[in-house]
Image 1 (cartoon, rainbow, N blue to C red):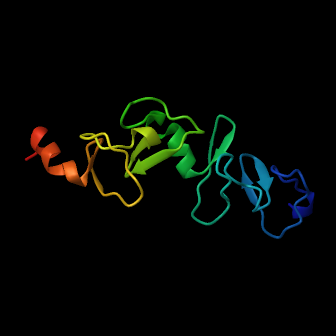
Image 2: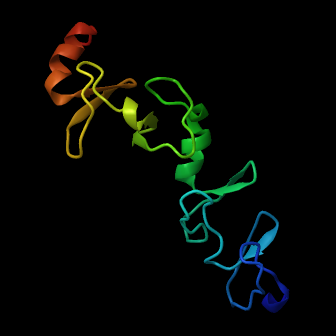
Image 3: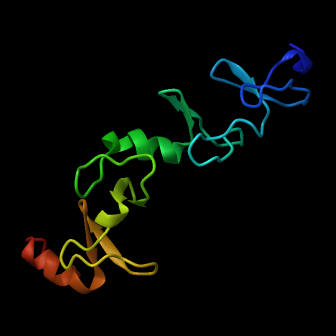
Length: 136
């Protein structure tokens, strides 16, 4: 099929480019296929497109919304699309839930912590936390 006969699913303009993408039964300019939440380009090599509930999503936003049942690893409440989150390994936390399980101090950039199961423990409380919870 000639690219000039194709219409982009994003901008609705004709595709005259030599290279274009096909996703979700539509054709796209490389720059027009992007995540509906963060806007990152989904047509780049190594990127994956996730499509759910009518939204085109990158892997990070898909997992944030739908991965792990979309629940915070600390409070088990749903994480909404507009909420800021923190991620440690495969766990996702509301920003307000990302605090030391022992002293309840919220972490700042550069603070050191350890993930024990789903609990986040600051460096200062690590010894006491593991002793109290029978891990020593």
